[in-house]
Amino acid sequence: MLSKIIAEDLVSRLRESIAIKNEIVITCHVGPDGDAIGSSLALWHYLRGLGKSVHVVVPNRFPDFLAWMPGADEIIVYEKDRTRAEEVFAQADLIFALDFNEPKRLDKLEPVFSKAAAPRILIDHHLYPDNFAQLVISYPEISSTSELVFRAICRMGHFERITLPCAQCVYTGMMTDTGGFSYNSNHPEIYTIIAELIKIGVDKDDIYRKVFNSYSHDRLKLRAYSIYRKMKVYPKYRTALITLTLDELNRFNYQAGDTEGVVNIPLSIDGVVFSVLMREDTDKIKISFRSQGTFPANKVAAELFGGGGHLNAAGGESYTTLAEAVDKFRKGLPAYRHLLEE
Ligand code: 5GP
Ligand code: MN
View (cartoon, rainbow, N blue to C red):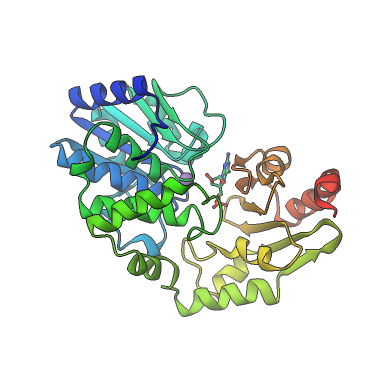
């Protein structure tokens, strides 16, 4: 039996909203990861099972290692099919916002989302959600939005409606947002849920292999290059920084998601508690932050680069050159000395 994390009145309001709505759009953050796609597709499967007309719209491409997910081929990618995305948002009578806490995380899809007339329901686990939804189901202590979707469905009395495809999507999100249950994963109920998902038929070993062991040759070489040639360690600050230019990425035939997980690698060095990856994009520098223990990666992301996220996993952007972003980081790092030095 799971504890009742989601408040009863939120469950009732969720149930009531779903009951009276029929044209539903589900959306998630830019650069969708396993939890964004996992939670969106899990909810999509559930709502379709109820007979709703429902579409998942994401701002931009998701990584190939998620393409196997049941329903992935029906996702509308805004950057590829703007007209269709705008159409479904305009027709929607209910919008679900999953796995993000502020509309700007939708990037270029934000104006479409903000203009749509339909009421919004947020299901998320990031700190400090903005006030943009009529119903807010926000539990930062839960390690994935996919787990929250599972909990919400169960609390509505619909555990029996969780089909194998839905369960596979829930599992994928829970697995990816905890790095294969290697961080943020000590809550015992995570494993109660996994046991239920396995009983439904989820093959967890197969999902692990599809998501984490499905590299292209180029992707593995890029990973090796990032560590061997591009990683800089600042032992005094127990910090590591990796930078990748567009030119370097192109050399390895970069595809969306290819640098996923690279930022975690330096944390495997004994003593390193903070790791940063800066990846040059066509219009910005995308920055990922990871930490171990109590060091607040999200604080650095917010204070230096206007980003955010969780204590141990955060992100931000810089609209400067890569060199300027590095400079800003190096100059800013000493301010966190008291939290980093041994
Ligand atoms: P990643 O490094 O995998 O892109 O993101 C790690 C975490 O930080 C995720 O929870 C993600 O939602 C959050 N995050 C990533 N980029 C940004 C950003 O630009 N702004 C904010 N507020 N959060 C971000
Ligand atoms: Mn998430």
